[in-house]
Length: 346
Image 1 (tube, rainbow, N blue to C red):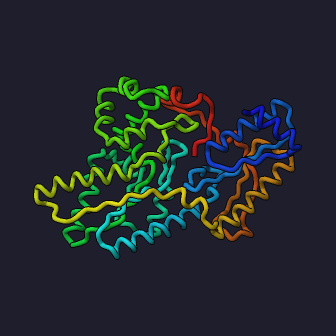
Image 2 (cartoon, rainbow, N blue to C red; image 1 turned 90 degrees about the vertical axis):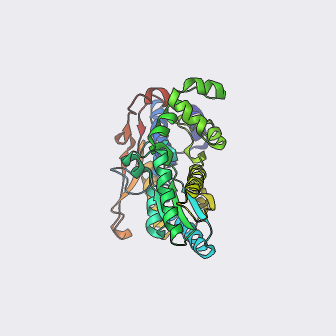
Image 3 (cartoon, rainbow, N blue to C red; image 1 turned 135 degrees about the horizontal axis):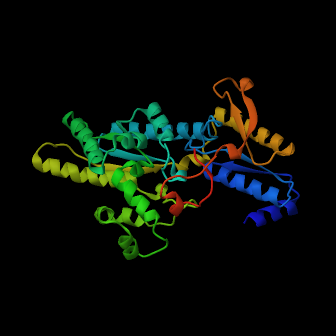
């Protein structure tokens, strides 16, 4: 593929190649630039930080292009749904927000969910980082949601809005272990082979899950060998388990309300949103910076803009070598589930 890219650039007479994306895309940018240099190509390869989930942020990148637009667009959808719910007064909306799937949930990944919650004030926000810090089990998480539903029902409110970060499952200790074990299993393979690969506890957890989630855990993986978190219907799992818990409480007499969950995933809808004023200015600036870097013969750089909190006139544009952002994956899973090479971690 690298040679095909080089040949295509040479055939088209390109002097610059700009790759726009998140951590994985910009990791690829570094390796493409290295390959082109090794082959004597004069094509400059430049990366641009972009990602609606806001993951491509580090000590050199203040904001990812598209995050401002995404947070405002999702906030509008969540706000509209919450208002409709308060009008109908009979549904609990479990809304999963796209967050961090590009890194398999291995890093802080609730940026979009938190920003949307600050703008819309839902009844509950389930953050990956908070669950991870408290080391909450799935049962504790379900009980926390059920407690909120029970308290609101006692006040005559059988409706509400619950926001769920996409990477939530990876913060739950038992799920983290299950996912890491599944990722070490060769794919594709049959269910029996996967079960034989799991430890006793992980096998029991897997078999206790609803059928839809069992299937999603065995779907084709991402290019970085991680499971596709965007395919996990976490909101549906929580709704099912909370409903079971409330039925148990109804039998005990502690819950006397109604619970009608409606599940929804919000994420890819925002890809076609009209860009915000900030993102339009930011995109123009990053594009111009990338063009200047390429035209000046720099390769293996990322176009960056700093001082974004100031007016546009006060922004500072420049380039940072991608090698300054590369890190070697650590931990026992790195040598098995990830390619043994430096990558950009947000």
